[in-house]
Image (cartoon, rainbow, N blue to C red; front, side, top):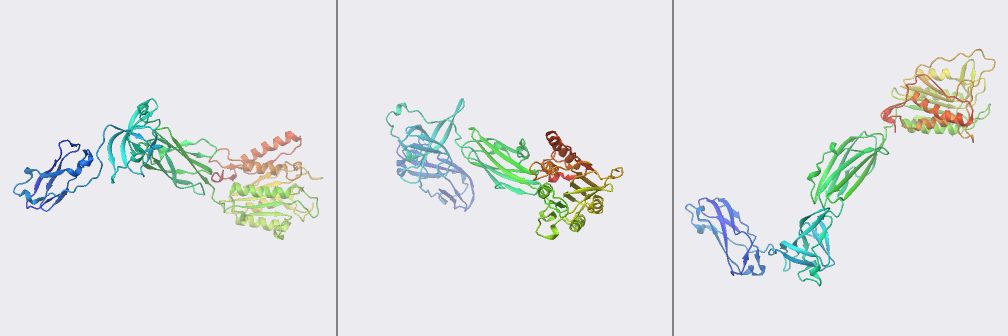
Length: 534
């Protein structure tokens, strides 16, 4: 109803009273008085009365009388107050302490009087539901009835008020209803919470060092009790970081949702993020997201890989081609060097410039030194014939013989004059004693150049059984492919040599042969920086 003040003075502290002229047998269950406060001249205020009576069919017989309190007027004529009454049936009458029986196969119990409301439980046929509140519906027949449920939780029970679909119920007791007990829901939360990754929505690969996670958590059946956000590298122990996220567990009630926001650092490799949500019914949901961090491409380093298996004037060296290819792929993955910055020279190369003649190797060496940046590594690998002459180690190109070759000192001089931050040479060659040579003089340390030798002086560099790869190159590839000793630490030349020594020691114990790899130059040279370690 509406109340309009048509007078010229304020109706102060107006109170509207509803008096229903009715059959004395009708029981009125609602309040019939409402305070509107001050009503200014020309102002309209609304008063709403939800008239709940029993039985509801007598509502049309009512003749309401509406009055406004006398004390609210000073000089106004009460007839100047308009009090139109709009008779609408918004709800069916309240029903108290009445049993309804489930006539359908089952009754769906919901959180509200709507098909879109959350389902809480299902009551089987013959169950008894106690009506405790309103019937609801706009047609001749009600659609929903408010019922009371006994909910058993572990060693205690509690009461929940829900809504049941009227169409699935009956007031007629079925056969044997005297033995039927009110429906008992053993667990209130019958389904687990919902967990959805909003951003990112699925597993991804990135070169970034941080991640921003957004997770949506919903609870439609019970009350959310705990949430964990576990983070860590794949294969390692995950730790709970929920305290570092924007989230408050107690705020999530039935039918609500909450957002978890978390920003954290990414380590190289597969970073696991696992959300675990559990409600008060013990229902649990786990969702996992994998963010793989790859190191940014290394655009400062350059590598020259030479494998000479077929010589023009000397005997062939089995396995060198496969050694070179394996080393090229391993150093690419270890340093994340772009493929275009790795040059592979083998005898079966399609282009003449990529075949390892003496001139081609020297041209490629000069380019290696010129194109390597100060933040990068100049990496040179050679697998083939080597010879000692005049106390100097020479590397024999494809078109060379025992009287020719490229001196190791020449290789070192080229690298030493470059801007490369790290200068690394790996030689898988034999170092036989020179015939009729004077007393051997150990070469001096090579300054900034770090050199890995496959064997000591006067030793051979052996091929693995089957002749497809050398023992040293296999150990080098395996050692380089291993993870760093500790997260965040670089892999140095000294540590890499230690791994190679361990692998070669196992081979010597098995075969009884002598081949002892050597390291010359700075052992602290960084082979793989920490930001590129797996």
